[in-house]
Length: 377
Ligand SMILES: CC(C)=CCC/C(C)=C/CC/C(C)=C/COP(=O)(O)OP(=O)(O)O
Image (cartoon, protein in one colour):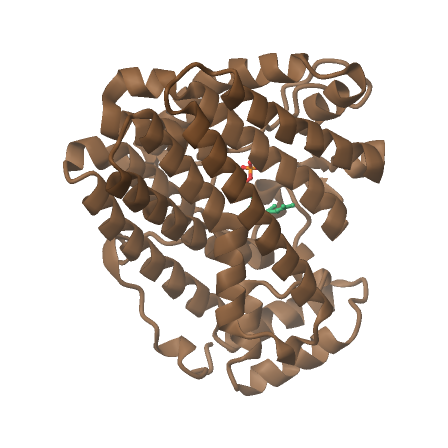
């Protein structure tokens, strides 16, 4: 189906994931399909069990007006204030903090790193609250977004409150690494803002003005930075040397970019029953996601068709979405994104081997990295 676009069709998957043939081939809620998937599922569950009490206790300290929005956003309370047990997200980032600490410092470091893991998850959720307002996204984690329920102002304030809780979690932690971790997390938030700015600025530009390189740089800042920071914080809490911290940061960044590439594929072809978002939402919003920009810049006939579709506002109805998705696919955007994800994962594996040479100690991080790019449509 691909029409051999410029350069992008030539990219071939490489590295660990290609060998396992696993990029985007497993069901998101079934990580048990392989031994690694099972390990990731266990790590994610254990991470939730360790971090949720810290998150709940932090949220309990918020003023009532903010607390109800935060509890709703995490799926722990309905909008009317009654208890709920909704989807609180995959908790990949806190699992990366804990797995990084465990890889370099064993169970003691893992236990000590819980405040850092909570801080990273609070920052992640602060950015989701703000992002949904900025993008006018109406659905997240299978339910209406906070701004659609509580209004823009209160959703933004709740995001600010989660950001404050993240800083507080580190500020009150007596661990010797907490100050360095707070500084690193603050740097990361600035990079997230830069990435988000690039993203929103890009959305205002004409499709033919956006390059693939700048889209990749934006995605690394918007998504890679926080996964890198999560790993770096785990390493700091393990008392790791600077080079190990830097290598784990690079590992998380590369895995994070692979994660965003697959997330963008899922944003177009994902099954709403799994994604918790409406089908084709990114195409309907005319988002310049990575597969779309790859397709638009491919120089193929399908690129011209896609550009024409993107020049007009989305019209409700299935045909527009199907034609857009087909054009992205025929222009090679989907294959390119999956090949790029595999390349970034291969780079992540190299950084991981540098940071944690013992394969047994690195096993948890490897399983989590493979899990984030094995999610499928
Ligand atoms: C400053 C600012 C507003 C920045 C915005 C940054 C932003 C929202 C980037 C998107 C990152 C992303 C892939 C989120 C989904 O994560 P996930 O699939 O892990 O979500 P989950 O927690 O629901 O599982």
